[in-house]
Length: 100
Figure (cartoon, rainbow, N blue to C red):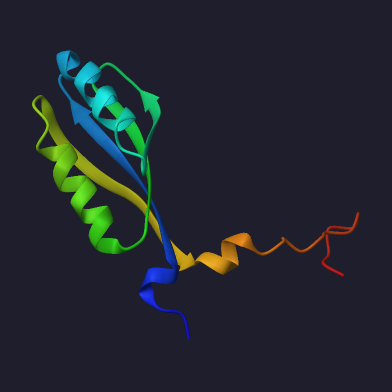
């Protein structure tokens, strides 16, 4: 059985912010190895997160909310699975669309 440390948590957030906060938000994300700015808008941005556990995901939400000019951070998607499942090859699909 896998331990929690062997999991990967993938999440996405919509960050609502003031226009003048976009630069500071992007700079913070650039300094965070587990965050990625997927879409930057004037008042809303989409942030991707890949962490080791759900507590780290919640910590990233709290940290983003604490940035000056950030109004809200909404969790849009959260998925967790064992790390080795992400490293496993995908099954091939035949031309008919059915798995062999």
